Image 1 (cartoon, one colour):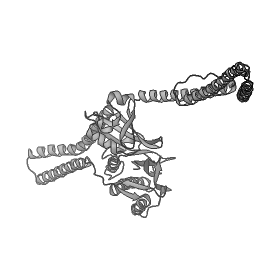
Image 2 (spheres, one colour):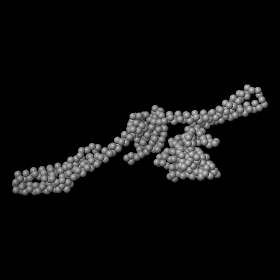
Image 3 (cartoon, rainbow, N blue to C red):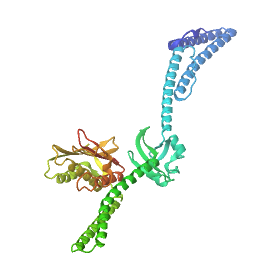
Length: 442
């Protein structure tokens, strides 16, 4: 029909208006024909009016279907490109362009989602997404295949075991803990927090560390044997020498001083034997894991306590002491007594390292990192760590100080580990050393 020659939104409105005008004119003509009793003419005009009305309804229906397809295309994953109705070609083109843009955005999002899923599936660690109710809402391939994880309660993952599942439920964001699965495998669980859809989520990464623990255990045994052998040889060598001397003297004719020498040698052997027993007892006590009792403690108060202790250690020595907490409102969640003991050990080592040196300085800081960790740092400008074996400072009874016990750093590390943290060291610039205790903020 002639109405189809119009295009665009204005053309559609003009075509609809013309149709309405034609229908009105035909209606008027029908009335005139009826008054003059021209029934055949009236019937023809009525038929034409009906066709015009049907054409108008068809055009409106086509426009309605096009808009409906556009809305469906915005909500559905797949869609059919709508055909432009007669008179609304410009609207049809705009709708198709908008749907193409939506399709491109969806394809890009799907590509990113597939990439992240593939990336998560390549990770050897089992990844579990936990919602606020403690239910598993997502996982990667390692969790599905290695742990037979399913969506739902964390306790339903049989590979975890009830004890590990209970611990994972309680771990806050930022926590790291070594757990034993139901089959007694050792794993390291690391928890991170994030927000999705306005709700808090936790991402738990479970990494098998059995082989790493075996290597660490072997290294620990090697260090233990090395220290024990060194200390025992230091005591047994003179004991053996004196025993041989006593045996030789007993086989010789007695002289006036022989009995006194034998008694003195026996007393030395007894003292060295007692010293060896004391050493073994100290080593046994060192293996006891400290029991922590956490409490909330403002960092400012904790620093004030350490300030007084540090001043007592420094005494009259020319050592510049400083301390600070960033931010000032920082609050610790730790065992105050044990953490204080660990800090004292670090401060004492730093003070001993700088004592007698020019421009000696020791600084203590407490800082928050990533809202998940608190770092206690003790820095000095002393001679620094041994270059040949810097990790040796953590071996029990290792010391570079005359009269040192060699257990301060070992105890400090045990205290840090008992809090779910760690003790690390690094060289300071331009000289000196920095020891850091990193603890979970929660």
